Length: 451
Ligand SMILES: O=P(O)(O)OC[C@H]1O[C@](O)(CO)[C@@H](O)[C@@H]1O
Image (cartoon, rainbow, N blue to C red; front, side, top):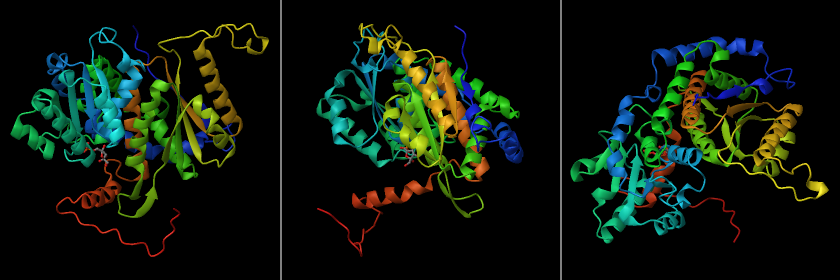
């Protein structure tokens, strides 16, 4: 089958399609800087875009082992869980975990526990048979509290049931550093490596995302093929050939014009977690207090998730008539894996729906929303997926990772750190009594409490 690339439609970001939109002259003013960013990407290609063959090979070495398991439970959070969720939802049917093993062609169910909510953890534990479950504990730092707690729970339950944790836990972490690597070295757990030069939120195409994807039968080679082709395109200096650079430049220019919100609205329930993955990428990478010169800039663009058509009935009123402070990106899927024809009920009032494909209605809703926004001069763009394939999803990850790097370059900030997450973590450690951490939450001088 011919591999269809993603398509990008930027038309509704521009004049005259929307008044007050961008003009080509506007691009000119910042074009040189974007070209610098592209050159920098080409000459000093970040590790996430190198797609080391080792990442696939190391995962494939575990293929014979993983076929013994009916279920993989990923224990990870943020960049160590969202990519797994994005792959699971976008590339497997929505009811995958409810299917029989036979219906799944022998591939594993995949659950991702990306919180320390006891209701969530318990609901997953209730649904698994420990004897045929593999826990993939993922943490780049090897010390994230939420993951450590869930790792301890999984290990404790395995031991309590007389099972050897080493036969049921796979650890994915830094090759050298952190507590989890120590556990691997001292206790002999099977492990995979998170490449040290790849930040958590950029790690979906490394063993972090690849292992659970392979376990559930996703074509990880094709995922890399899509990403590789996309990353190659990200090196093109002609902006009209380089979707990632165009995303970054247009979002940068709109941010400068006060559009501080980036809505990503997917017209496909299977794309829900692609949007969640994007939210972490855009938020953690670009939301920064200081620029590279150490000056306070308080920059960033707040990513917001929406699902069409559902959120047309909860959000679109605001997007059309509220403050014009958003750039909206539609994710549009042209061909769905399943189809349902709307029956003719014989009622005149419903004739317009009769015998139509359900996807036709969803796509008409996307077009209708896009056109309404355009008429209201609300900038919007569209990423078009022909189908949900590994190749296309790989492309999506790659384009947005590169766009984030370009946007960081334009904003003159470091898109690869997240210092703003630390304080809350430290306070939590102190509250939990971790040695070396102290923090006292002082009584508020003014209290406003309603009981
Ligand atoms: O993989 P780790 O080290 O457990 O981190 C999980 C997540 O936590 C963060 O560090 C933020 O707290 C994210 O950047 C990261 O993806």
